[in-house]
Amino acid sequence: HESMHVEMILIFLCILVIAQIVLVQWRQRHGRSYNLVTLLQMWIVPLYFTIKLYWWRFLSMWGMFSVITSYILFRATRKPLSGRTPRLVYKWFLLIYKLSYAFGVVGYLAIMFTMCG
Image (cartoon, rainbow, N blue to C red; front, side):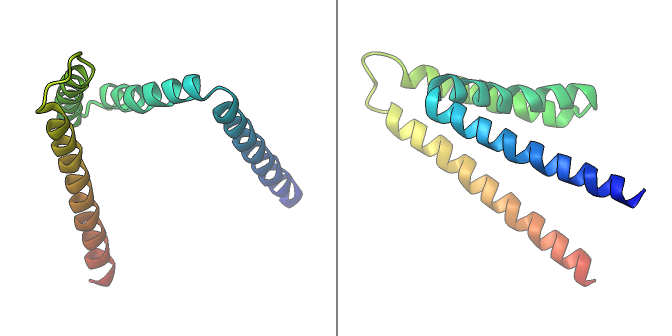
């Protein structure tokens, strides 16, 4: 029985290595399709799980983020480019970065305080 577990782990590790090689080759040979597919998956997978698990607050935040980012993307792709658009793009993604960083620090501190009592 123990040898079966070792065999399963080896199969799993081999599949991981092969999948990584395939992904790297895909990215190198067909970068545009790789970027498009990964972007769509990063956008659609959270939607799928929020609907499936009934996380309505997350769904509303995901929706707001998607609408605002879509608007900024729309503004950034217009010709001619407005003089305020680069500042808008920078401010939006800087805000997202700062919020993500702050939530990460708060989450880390919450885990540390929980573990340390």
